[in-house]
Length: 527
Image (tube, rainbow, N blue to C red; front, side, top):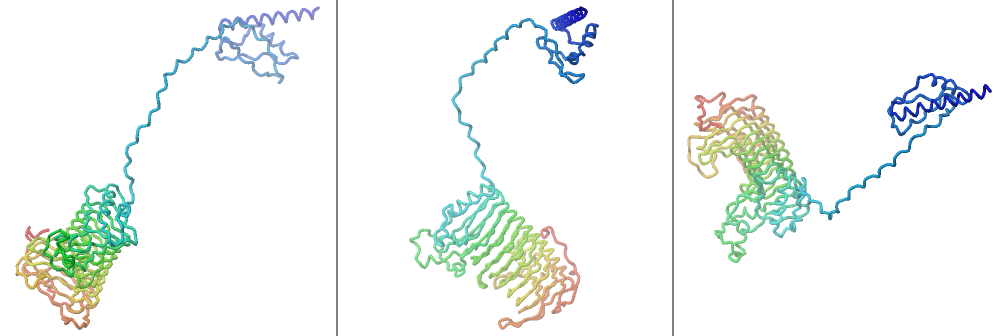
């Protein structure tokens, strides 16, 4: 009977415990551990055969409609048996979800906006063949060249390509800026030949291929520019300006204008580079730089016959920061001619000959002012040239040549290796005039070899003597050549300077020191 009483008490306690928890859940209070005596008794009785007691409730807020999930049993490690969950009042069914608003009617697909026009990419190649050039050595390809240049002009760092093994015949062309993009390359691997026949040149032009007002222009490759100069050197004046073909006889078609063009000219350009190509048989000067800044010429070959008139190799005028090196020059006039307005010119590792040597001038023609400064010529070979290193000025001019250095130059069969001539005249006679372009500060170092006429010639002005001429390591020996009468003695007139070492032959005519009463240059003479 006592056992039945214990079972009855246990049932009562379970009922009371369930009632308290149900009320707490309905009232919405925080679920917490009950510290009353009935809970303690419940825990003690729960440690019987059925395992551990109920786990403590979580301190988190929980939804009133959802009891916390039971925790795994503890104590002796057996799974706990939780009391049956309290009965919950029936809940209202969930409200039906509102349907999403209807979608707007779909619009017809639209074409994507057209992208902006693409800029031509840098480095594009424009072959003259793609623009219609034939390259057969007969057809006039002038228009194809002009069209290729027009396209390349619009693209930075573009290339105009002249493929190898083709000969392009073209007339006078001007590849012009200043609106062209910079750094254009003229890749010459074929041959460009000048048109022959007087009709292509009208009354005469000063240049054949001209590049003007460009920045970063380069001509490179292994090709050839052929000026067809023989047609001009055998000049015969036509005296006929009529452009009608029918007005020409076969004989008159062979006559060329008296004005002869330079083969390749750069004007008003900066950062100019010419490398690798050959220029041959120009009607007049082969390569000219006028009013250019930053010029680089190397691995160039220039060639025309020794008797071709006025065919200077490279002509510089009003140009600064010029470098010419590793170049072979053979022509009928000056290998390199340096005219007024040039400064900071560096020439080295050049072979010159035949020709007239490397010259500064002629300067001061027609009573003009001329200024040349900071010129270096070194490591040069001269072979069978008329002069070696020369400074030449006309009478009546003004201005100044200064800061000139000729060093390490080898002369072979050169008529007059060293020359300053302030009485230059290319005619039978010239009018004597008192004023002259002044010459000062000229260094001659290690100039050696053979001469066939005179070792040195210093002919300076009475009114403006040459000053500060220095000679070091000069060794020039005569070489007997049948057509020349050797004058083994040097010539000096109003030339002043210093002999730093003995010379061969002795140049005792150079007056030591400075000229007496050396005049101060006037503002008109200053550069």
